[in-house]
Image (tube, rainbow, N blue to C red; front, side, top):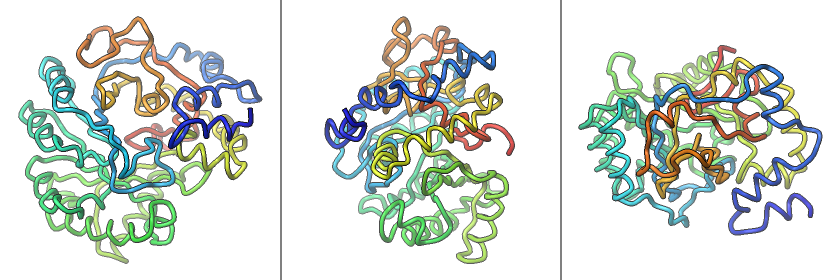
Length: 348
């Protein structure tokens, strides 16, 4: 069956299982485990849980071309208060220091603010992965003030400092609305080095290429955003586009899938592989299922069967030393300087 037809089975995109079948089919690209073994890195194992990443749903006010979650305004997957309470139970009885809340637009989960308040009450650091424009949606007018009061770190997507590039990837008018949101955050001292209110930005390429060196691009962002718009932030994270979901569909439609995967394989960096985020992060989906990372979550690649599968079955000792489930999509996190939710894995 043609690969594009395989991807199109299902609505709106092929299931995670079908995408895995596409990624793992026979071809010229070696298996990821094979490449790890060639560098003495197989099996890949966790070394602890420093971050609990909670995906609270796929509802979003945007529909971005690169979105690996396939989020949008029509999605109805929302984490319930009961499942969020199970996450809080785990946080309370462990010493996991960071809770990373993602989506969709996580702020659109009706229990988002309650969850943030409870996590902060437990003394943990909270990250909100924000698309910026959600701060301007009806009913969210006071969201920036809430985040500031709770001392939440904001990691916001801004794939370029040029309007045409951002709107091409994220939709017409997104750039201007993002600037408005950034100005509101700056007015609350987000992004000001001495304030302690952290505002980090995320860059990802517009097409099938690797990100440029992170520190160099960060300097460009600081210069251009300050000089053009008087906007300030703390750090810039560069993230590689993963060959899954909408970006996979775009690669297949444009006939660039094989070339992109081969580019990732050719750029494999064993130092990046040794430092991948899944070794220190555990991911929870909107139903409470556990995954090694957010990308595995979107591909329905659950933890190994002998491990706990749901947040309610949490076992800190077993999960902190678990063997990680991998696939060819993992080349995206290990190419060049590497890619993680905190940007490059190794200096570039």
